[in-house]
Amino acid sequence: MAESDSRNENTNEQVKLVRFFMGAKLLGQTRLVTGDTIVDHAELAGVYIPTNCTSGRCGTCLVTPLTDTIALPDVLPPGLDDFTIEEGGRLGCISKPTTDCDIDIRPPL
Picture 1 (cartoon, rainbow, N blue to C red):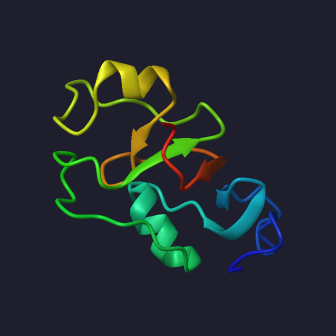
Picture 2 (picture 1 turned 180 degrees about the vertical axis):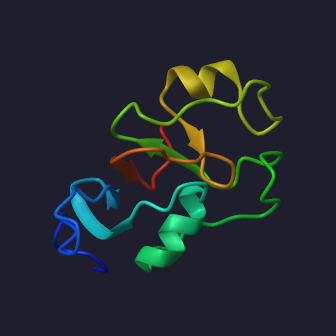
Picture 3 (picture 1 turned 45 degrees about the vertical axis):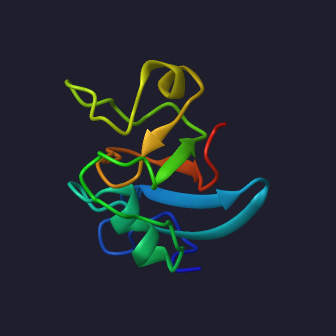
């Protein structure tokens, strides 16, 4: 696991983390990098999320945020529909966390 302390020693400010789970098991975590996708963060944390199109078209990278902090795109891509959203699904290739978040790498379905 990449990061264990959530405080930045240099500035003593709270460091935001993106943590990855499979069920209750913590697979890895990394510091939040503004502008990076969930898939980018997973790679930094050493966690594999399958991808195919990397543009939101196919749905291969479907994950389930455990905290409701990931905004939806203004226009839904073909790989994401209303049912999937209602079940809590997000596409890792286009979703960009902006604060601490926990992600279950399993799809919501």
